[in-house]
Length: 347
Ligand SMILES: *[C@@H]1O[C@H](CO)[C@@H](O)[C@H](O)[C@H]1NC(C)=O
Ligand SMILES: *[C@@H]1O[C@H](CO)[C@@H](O)[C@H](O)[C@H]1NC(C)=O
Ligand SMILES: *[C@@H]1O[C@H](CO)[C@@H](O)[C@H](O)[C@H]1NC(C)=O
Ligand SMILES: *[C@@H]1O[C@H](CO)[C@@H](O)[C@H](O)[C@H]1NC(C)=O
Image (cartoon, rainbow, N blue to C red; front, side):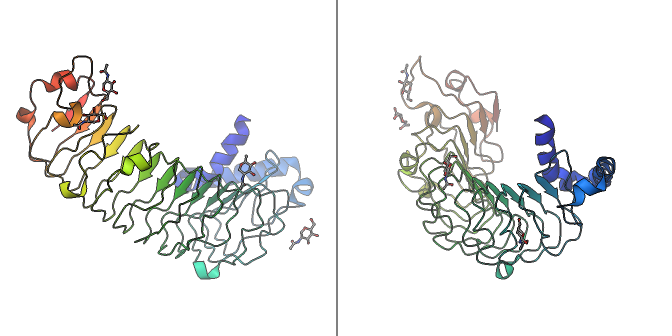
């Protein structure tokens, strides 16, 4: 089992450190193994451009070999690695025989939306992970299989997400759309019953998307143009644990007074915004990032409430307030009691 996992992971990570170190070694290793295992048995059902190691017969490795097209994928293959090529398009039918596919790894190619057939992926009823990050896509491909649990579309040029893009994807748990050109996404996430992670960093959002999934735990929205958080936001999404809103345009006016004071929130990143006050947060919060704002006052009540209650204190462990308009002497002595858990208070 360990080897299997290693091979699967190698298939993905190879690109990142492969250019420097393992690529040739990895290939010659595979070729050596193929040689020992005998050409006949192995070559029967593996395209020439790729490697299908006998030790893991359902995987096909075709990454980083200047491919311009997706090669023929035999029907027994479950994991196909095509990253780091120059593939610009995929015609309908290419995967039609490969209905066992569970992972399709296509990141770091030159795929453009106009050159992807309408039904390229639609017959892959077992597809679990689809990695299309670092391409030239301008919209989310249509007719994605509803079985997908992890979908990566980051680092493309996506500006359009048709409203039915994710319809019926009841098992999708992780959706990455970071570093695209999204301004307004409408309610496309509605119905993603299993989604726990949504990554929309580095887009052009002016507000937090509506109709987020109820189970969402991690929401990453750094580097957008968001000015406010809607009142009652955390009451609508009580499962949220990690909210990252660094590098936006948040002001005090955009934060309703108790908006972060309810919930299971563990981490709140509001750094690199324009806040002048420390927002009120729940006593259960563990990590609060507020560096590089315009905060002028250390308000202990923001973490500890107004009542000084001997049995109750804040769970904050990490509090960053550096690059604001306060200094260590602005922290009152009684902070030591309420913020007893805090290992780091950076000012
Ligand atoms: C699909 O697979 C069948 C047999 O498994 C084969 O006869 C057929 O040629 C394949 N089709 C394509 C388009 O490769
Ligand atoms: C979601 O996963 C469950 C359990 O693995 C499976 O039975 C169901 O068919 C999947 N739903 C879709 C839409 O693929
Ligand atoms: C935060 O919420 C708690 C629990 O609902 C409440 O007791 C507390 O007074 C609130 N803090 C502030 C500063 O409003
Ligand atoms: C401490 O405060 C929280 C809310 O801030 C409250 O739910 C809890 O009951 C309090 N615990 C005690 C012992 O007062």
